[in-house]
Image 1: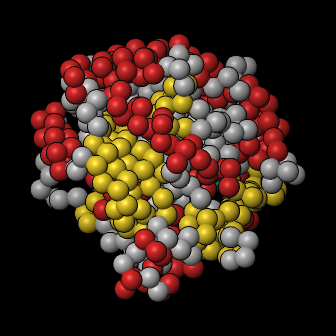
Image 2: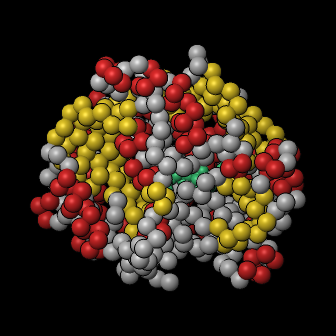
Image 3: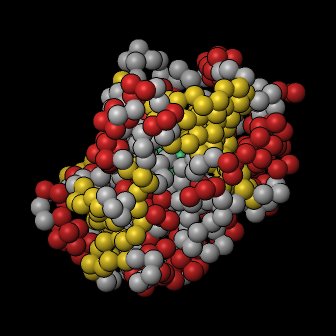
Length: 491
Ligand SMILES: Cc1cc2nc3c(=O)[nH]c(=O)nc-3n(C[C@H](O)[C@H](O)[C@H](O)COP(=O)(O)OP(=O)(O)OC[C@H]3O[C@@H](n4cnc5c(N)ncnc54)[C@H](O)[C@@H]3O)c2cc1C
């Protein structure tokens, strides 16, 4: 049974109402086929846990397939270190099941609350991109339903074009219902961390560039409010999976070493006033957090969850940004564009665009997926409250510099990029459209993201979902029907 629901991304901007189907209540693959076959002119998109920040998993006036009920771990092959899973299974559930068996997902983003389908759709990256590439690089098979070809099984060898168009394809090639994923054998559930507190951006970047190759994981948490000589001061962390020898003797037996029981999330405090995070609270937090970090530590052993997913401790932390929500802005710049990166950070700091979190990472080479975000160089991710006045103009100017330097923004985080920039940011977009058009010539797969960025549909094609007529549900609810996005600060 499909039900109307208002949906947003994690940033809580641009809600839209769609008819939401839960295929797990019936024969799931048949139910997915039925939704695709009966889709109206606004089309269909699959949704995981809705952790993309913008409108990628929304489809105002159309259909959305809620995949989270398809959460079975179908098979685990310990010898081959791989698992067959349904697409709606979360990384949280995977870790709770697999870590005690000595296995870890090859790539995890900054939250465990993403589904395997969502991780494939956005081709997510983690702190090990420089070493291991994206999530998609470790997917051995995708089982999906496509509008033109029905049920298909794709591997990088059997159907390279379709496999890589689906990896990072933002759900626009069809609906993934099952995947076979490669896993990493581990001895313990802990991470051994070496960390440095740096005094400025040069030191941060030199430390990262010189040491990345020595560690599987690396990340810098930048204090984006420090100015002048302290610009870019950071806490830089490098991590490796701890071995049993890294643990105190009492914790070495396998049963204890592989225990994985991250605390369930605590709710965001109900007293938190709307818009709690403003320039002053952010500045105070950044200062406190920077000062509390020691100048240099080596071999500090911490639970994996606190190294990878510190934000998961607070449920619904995205509400702290107030009713208008927030944007996450993430871009990548190629190696050699360090001066551009510096001047972008300078401008953000100068404009005092408060950011609770600013994360700098190094990426390794890109993969074969035409819409995959990562490419060799530097990536910076910032949270910015929409209520911040000059945001739209500031980010538009930043986009221009990113494009000029050969970089791009991340679609899974985006809710506001200017549509005309997409082709330049993603030069393989035309190749992706060709493959997508073979898998879905009528553009049954559609989303608010696709309507907001028409280059995803193509220059001449009138997508199934691009008609002016919205689904009656959306009109009844009187909500945005999608495709408007949020420009931030200009509403
Ligand atoms: C706190 C936080 C930290 C994050 N850190 C990172 C990070 O470090 N690295 C990173 O890369 N990303 C990061 N993200 C973004 C997040 O990993 C991606 O947006 C991811 O796609 C979310 O997964 P989801 O299951 O919530 O998918 P959704 O947000 O529901 O959907 C994302 C996309 O995948 C498609 N999709 C979902 N399920 C399917 C399916 N079964 N078949 C086909 N398509 C499907 C959707 O249509 C949509 O286009 C972070 C997000 C948050 C909130």
